[in-house]
Length: 426
Image (cartoon, rainbow, N blue to C red):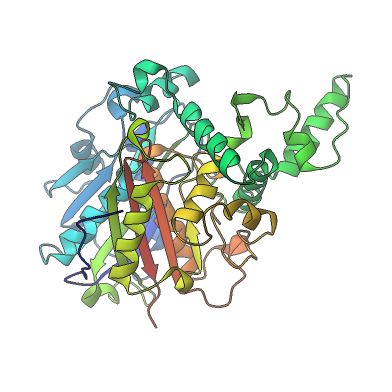
């Protein structure tokens, strides 16, 4: 694939020195600004040496569609007002599910350019105001409204087609997809901020208990796969995807504090460097050459690796955009962890688990942690930040001394992809 990208380095090193998440889930009594304040407070408390909020010089907020979810446009100044950081410049960034990943890139460049020293970057989305069909319609507007949406395209339908194409080309099967969900729910069960904090085994046992209490036929599940193959427990959404192949509808917010490296140690002894950033654009799915790979992901990751001076062999772990289980498999192949068609076997072999050689989505991913679309990209960065600082608790990767992690955030039908390389410097 030909590109016009030149190998570049950041003009000025940038680090993350604080990170915060709201609780992810469904919160009828809160709107997106409330969730952002919650994430901001969590970030402030995370900064080892504290800081004065008036040191923030600029801010970027990723948000996909508060206009449709909440009937609220122009959200950035509202956030600034609620945080008490007016009159600094603050800008809302919209790039579908890659909104806050794109916002982070803008924040990094604002510091790297020398314009600012301290920048706040976050994301937020309040999705549960609408019923499921309403959310599906809003998300579908991130596809091509001229060709794709009128044809009836929805995101479950898109990723169902991607999964079918992967099955047709390679030896991918339904159990591979289900094993991604099992792994990510196991990780999410260890994440106190996750929307789903139950393993598949827990949910399976709960269904058995409920049937017993109601005097109904008791399912004869022997394994988690048995449970997930039960159409009553896990109905089809868009073949070959079932309910538990899909990320949930989520309310949530995320934010990080970025600073120039020369002042990073004023905030913490363990800053995490943003060593590489990449963003690329792909064609709408209907105009793409293939369904089993996203060209933007390959281009964005190569930009980020080149900027950081690394190869995929240097990467200890990754948070990838698993809006559907097949998306995680495709991402691990596009990023270079595995060759084309090798992602499913890696899942089978446990290579992407916490104790595997390539831990993927230690947070639970979008699948279990939740997917408040405008907040997801920065949420991924926060997980890598905590992992590289050794602060991830029970879900800390089993590798000794991880130093490099990456994030992979996709918008639309692969039209946007943002990849970041984070590194704990010695």
